[in-house]
Image (cartoon, rainbow, N blue to C red; front, side, top):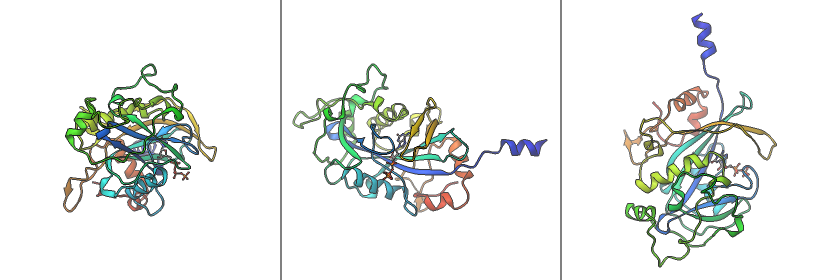
Length: 292
Ligand SMILES: Nc1[nH]c(=O)nc2c1ncn2[C@H]1C[C@H](O)[C@@H](COP(=O)(O)OP(=O)(O)OP(=O)(O)O)O1
């Protein structure tokens, strides 16, 4: 009857495991910094810099810490531009947590990128990475990491004009190192990156503010269908990625009643999942604002 239906239809409660992922953008030199992962989860792949959010740590503090630990770059929390959240749900079993990966870009920082135990830094062309990649157009697979450009120059601050210039491919010839960089090797990254990362970069190139969800003309979040697959982490656990949603983030400039405004551009599932969390679990980890 109705009660039984309601029970059978009620969503399962899943834990969220929070991660950060930071992508440094040097827009003046038309380039993007990624790390080649040397060990652990995602070993042998290129990705932004990030890791697990520790207990009692905010997401943004974790983003700052992990970026520094893995790349040597130092940023203040206000320089972190939150771009969205990847929600990776496993289908291996009902108890596997949803991986909740908070994606940031940074355009200013102190220090110089360094090789760490976890990541080797490599620069890629920003403007060459805007197109939706295909295996034939991607440079992936053919470029061993040791041959990719890795430079040591620190960036300067951003502006809409420089972003537009970089996106148009017009570079300052007096700046070394930016001309011959390859595009991001999307096919040597996590599978879903080739879906959301070009969208994010196009968004940055067209408008330096806001969140990725504004890309969607329908107002719904772009969803990347990803083939189920297994991936072993350090504990030999299998993760089968069912899907990923890139669902927007906070607009840090929009102040609402003394607080940052609530999440923008959320897909409906986002709210469902937040509501499913046991009271207190999400609350304690939340880094911004309030939920409706
Ligand atoms: N499917 C996926 N797509 C993606 O784009 N990024 C992913 C991903 N799965 C994991 N990541 C990112 C999130 C995070 O930045 C990183 C994984 O973090 P790690 O496991 O390396 O965390 P930690 O650096 O805290 O680990 P340890 O210090 O080794 O304990 O990989």
